[in-house]
Amino acid sequence: MDPNTWYRLKARVDVTADGSGIIRGKAWKRDDPEPEAWNVEVPHKHAHPNGCPGLFSFAPQDQRTYHDNILVTAN
Image (cartoon, rainbow, N blue to C red):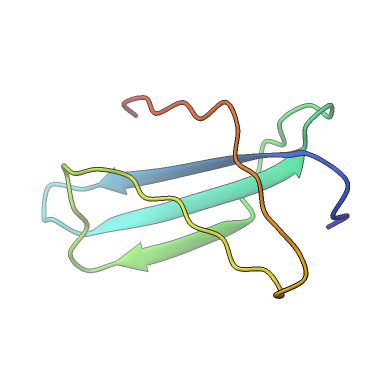
């Protein structure tokens, strides 16, 4: 990923009746169309059906991360 390019991120948690679920995520350049496929899909034995999303970044000490226009919606 280019540090001088803005990206869109999307995450989703789908919970099944037995309490397990799948956590999904994808990222794409801001001006590109959203891709159909998820970049990451991780099964989870005990997915949370409720709660608050969290967002945090990791970068080398000489770089910064910026977050803008954050929108949280129900699945």
